[in-house]
Image (cartoon, rainbow, N blue to C red; front, side, top):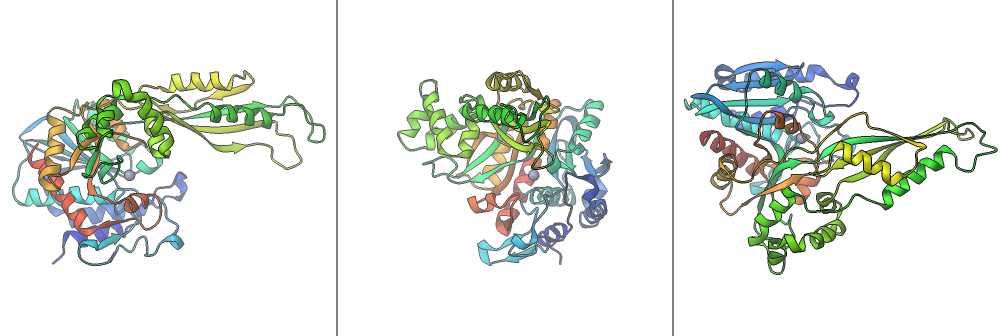
Length: 442
Ligand SMILES: [Zn+2]
């Protein structure tokens, strides 16, 4: 008989790969994925209404006893590209490697994000088959271009908004169950993203008034641009403990050893010290305590013996809760302090609002973690550093959380968007129980 694992592996073998260049996307793979879903989850496709949105995004509605404050379970169908030579196993082979509790499925998307997508469908399929009717409507929202910051989830939110739907709880990918995220804390922590940083790109342009590479001006456009970038690098955005990070540290405090416990409990006094230590501890903790900026693309002359008429740089900026696209742009302008460097921001999104880490929706997530995963796990609010599709939903819901119910090692987390992405079979199966409990408790 076909098992949940068989279905998972079959779906992992369909390479629904996202590329920034739309011409590279094999849309037939998404059609194939949709037909496989319909075949593998007959009860879901029988009991739920399905809509295809913006080309390949999927929205399912499972009618509950009430249409008020529905539950939305999100995941995305697309995966990031692979470099096959780097992988120990075929990235679209979905091989099961190892045995016992260590047996793991190796595949692109095993965690990000077919792990969640398929676990959600497994949970709903079995509940429907058991005749379960949810108290409130349940929506499944599966975007198709999350990895390229596409429009799939945004189009779904537009539809729901037009219908006047305000979800009572939205759960998307994000944090996981981890160990050692906070130094000295032994208990496993479920990192539930209550907010995510904003993202913007500032383009800096320096122009040349004329001249020749053999007789360069004293400050050519390339040097002017380099000076601007150096100033930005030397004066990073200020450090501070923002509300989601404060919430994380105070939640974790009782489980931290002394003196950390006292330090995390007295952030009104120790906050600046903690922010300073986090900034030095590593790239990830640094990103928790400040808006970060990094130059990514650089453009200069078209040839090695040609003076650049324009020199351009893209600066990718991730905004900490409290900053905005406007405030960061103003700061970049002030730090560069050069009116000859033009600054434009073609697109950007402010940090998400912060969802509460108290109250009924939060308790529903924490309850499902305790019942389906492990009672020892500490449910902890945190600030998600990257952007996800869930940001769209903050427009129609005050309770948006970013968490996938998988207990992951550091090595497993590092394989995301890299090579040898994998998830342990036991860990994945327990994740199905989380979604079942979350739906049943809603
Ligand atoms: Zn993802």
